[in-house]
Length: 104
Image 1: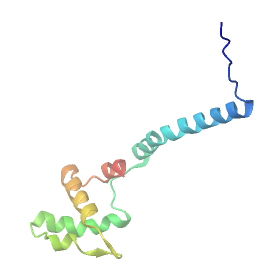
Image 2 (image 1 turned 180 degrees about the horizontal axis):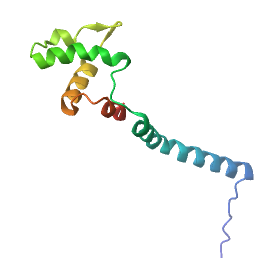
Image 3 (image 1 turned 120 degrees about the vertical axis):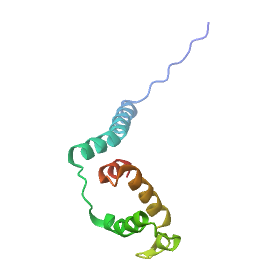
Image 4 (image 1 turned 90 degrees about the vertical axis):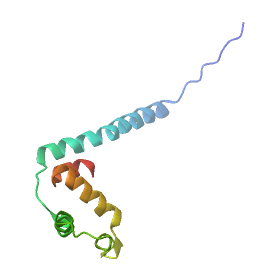
């Protein structure tokens, strides 16, 4: 009959495994905490960089939006895709900023 040897980890390694497991559990819950924070404190007010979309949404609603409006530079960055997504999301949600907070 073969005797199987059992490998026992040192106590320090087991403690480290518990700490890593706890940290992983906490990091898994962070997105839910962010959603609860937005639910508790999110309000539908234009703030910060969101004002730049007002110009584009005005052009979008009047039917005069051109591709060149989306290709303009914003602080040395091209914002074509983020502004396009923001316009589409705004037209779907009637420009509710709380929905954008959940997605960002």
